Image 1 (cartoon, rainbow, N blue to C red):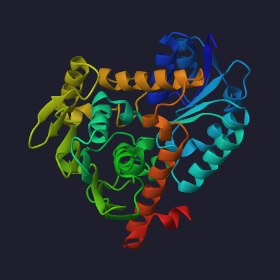
Image 2 (spheres, one colour):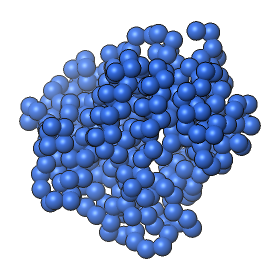
Image 3 (tube, rainbow, N blue to C red):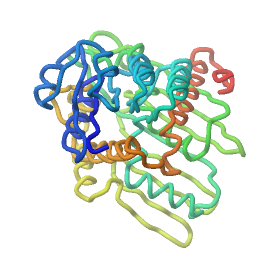
Image 4 (cartoon, helix red, strand yellow):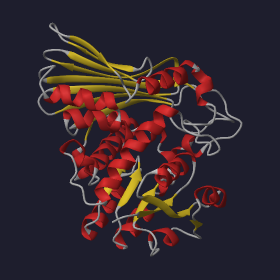
Length: 370
């Protein structure tokens, strides 16, 4: 396949940038896009056709593979349509907002025998891949515990993005599924899930209806555990993944930016991103505090471009997807990302956590997947 022609469903903040990356990637082209808002502007920028509906992308003869980057609640239909058309599909995270929808998408792509890759971009960070290699080599011994935090503070907004509406985004837990996905990549699927929290500081006009403080405990096979924090009600912002083992620990710091290995015999610090320039760019971004969330990443303003560090990992995952479309064999590290299974497992756990919060009890993930 000399040229892979891509169709994109959803050309907001993320989808538009995915289109720009594909249009610059050697051997790739964007032929069609669909978005109910602003598609003509992006089509003119990319030099492609703006379709009238989803089928105008998924069923088009000049589309070889489909990128789904619509809002979180609207992924199932384009994925199923792409599968019926026999086309490989890349779907942004979270792939759905319920285990039921995930399972339907998995069944559709499996039945059609098409590639189904989830856009869990955190897995393509240089430092995350390095941490996985160190763990596989036994550098920190047997894994015992993971602790993640992804939190900060949000001010009242002039208009409320779909990302702040629970029915459209799933709220912090689903929209920021990256850390939960990574923990399960390391420890396997969670067995039981407990979540407490609520909307404690962001109510009324200028705010959405998502919970702004979520505290999570997960239990895994073999007596291993994880704790995760999400939300926008934290005046002291933190963003990290701390991985504890019997022989050492690894901290993936997404705010102070870097990856650090510590054992009794060894101390080593690595880049988080592929280049020092990208790490420095991320440091500047987080150094802006609340001003970093000015309508770009958090609120999805499509008129803004993603920062350098984010573009770098987006480019890496799209190069990987493009190679798979051309027939490459998935790396063992990424295999669960390329059949939808890891993304579905993350949503199953998220659904169990949602049930835990609603009913005030510990929930077995098997209650969701049975």
